[in-house]
Amino acid sequence: MRVLIQRVIRAEIKVEKKVVGKILNGMLILVGIEETDNIEDIKWLVNKTINLRIFNDIDGVMNLSLKEVEGEILLVSQFTLMASTKKGNRPSYIRAANNENAILLYDKFKEELEILTGKHVESGIFGADMKVSLINDGPVTILIDSKNRE
Image (cartoon, rainbow, N blue to C red; front, side, top):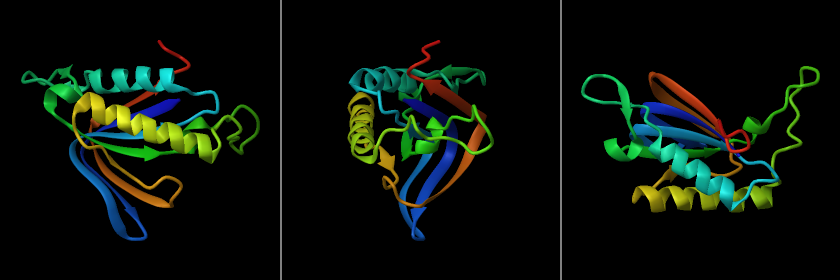
């Protein structure tokens, strides 16, 4: 499982020109789900994500977590995060989970975020053609892969 986290001042998702999710001050989290992902990957990533110290303290140092700043989350499913560009110029998505498994794991990921933050998590619509807009704060963008726990 891979997440691409962007610290944002605001972010929103539109589907068919209607806003389906929006936040202020927090994280836009794009999540890619692999066929071999499981609950252990979710729990590790959720814990890592909400405790990641990427928000500025009073001295302007990235020293605070999402929980400490009481930030919001906008979660977006994005199978293209599982792209392999090893061969040629056309990305392969062979590692991406099938829709049935991906939806279950995506929903569980969202549920775990809500449990650990104690807040509602805004989200897009799984599988929809979404238009995502954001103001990246910093910019701060972090990629985390549960299969590569550095």
